Length: 417
Image (spheres, rainbow, N blue to C red):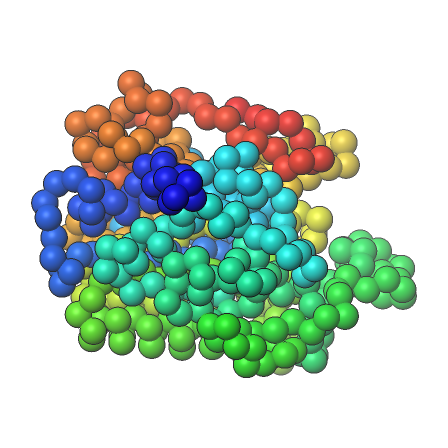
């Protein structure tokens, strides 16, 4: 009973969950039937930089599909992840709570026996109880043992890897790039360095609770994700039930493994090639949404944290948030830091007919921000202690906060605001 009561309290306090409550009218407003509740698709890129999207940064020319999504939807230019590393960011996305509240403040390892605490309520659990079909495709990284597995955290379907794809060995040719240390272009000794970046535990590919491939073929992983995602959208649409799809991509995390390796000197550098591959994958999902009822599907794209600057040319762009002060002292202004490039991420919303097209919002927002009372538009604004993202999706003139605390990764920095 105590666990049930705690879950109820957490449900009321959920962060991102509030956005979906608002959109689907699960809590307030019109009572919907199962047949006309909106569908939700969240695409989460890994280690993507704010400046990796052409819509954000003119120097980028490799994201035509994402740029088109921005032109047809809403772009948030001051949107922030809840943490600057993987597991804490993903835990906050699915619970609406910062790591100091949900208990996830570090990345989980291959040897971790725990995960996202079992007394935390996930967005998938909330929507499943409301009649949704739920699926996660891609990287989980919130615990892979026992009840921490995604099939026990509200997801009907799971297809993907349990943690980052640099956390296990594979037979994929060229996988051990970049080697240690991280920047081969800047170190002549890199190729002869004896230490390996990757563990000797073969990286598994799960379909629900079954390992279907180990080690996983990384070169074909993106295509499998796209195929599984489009199949899920099609089948869920045909079922007549609303659905929630959480698509957690391997892009743009190292190693950068391409389905079609470069065949000529004119082929773009590895990062740009991988960025194009990710963009094409997102474009395929958007095309599927357009063909299966875009008027009833909310599509969201964002990142878990900023680029991994320690990987040098194999990392993305933070755009103008380069942190000159930090770089002059030999540090990074991106992933694993509380500098802006570490948590300021691209964010796009697409829902034709519901969200205005070609709108750029400068609202200062974070993935966890929500106030239960703020689900009603009349309560959106700076007078509240938090805001719902929904306020800005449907009211572009909604006022926003001027600051918020961003908690650092333990051992990596202090809280910043």
